[in-house]
Length: 64
Length: 138
Image 1: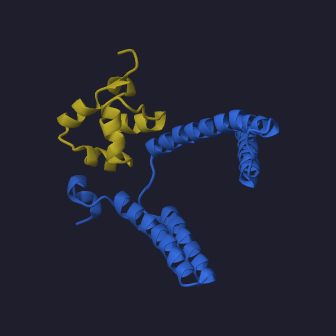
Image 2: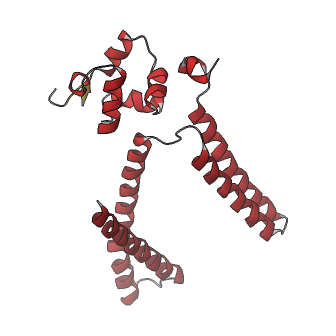
Image 3: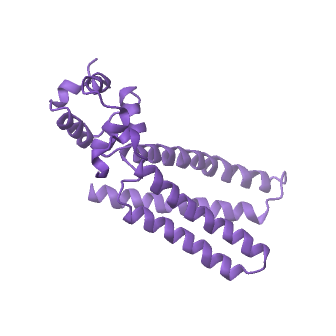
């Protein structure tokens, strides 16, 4: 699924490891999401949205 | 300075550290088993092997870090499905094929063939029971 995680992370100047620690997953999981090789669960999507203080649909776009 | 005030990129990953400890305990248990067998101390070897396995389980259970996340679970699900598919083909095609070859006198099946067949049968019985169980709970 297309997503804005990498862009948002660049805006907040966070590494993949920083973001992974913040939402309690592995760095590899963040990398896989950014490369669109893994779609996160709804729970993790909510956590990511809360972390970036935005809505899930601002981060993920299933139609693109 | 608390752990969380340090950027994650500059501190060792607790997840990796505890995973390594868990696998090291299991590895030590397995190594101890082989060494003990070589020294003809089988009971001691099994005890050390169990201790390693239990130690691994305890680390996984009580680690302050989450050792496996949802992607790990997704990978395991896909790997399990692939494994079951491989053995399903082996069971569905291999068992009757082997029996036919034995009946027609082309091969003389060893006892291991029947052992493997019953083992595969048991695996799929357990799988079916698990599907029924989780189907009712989900």
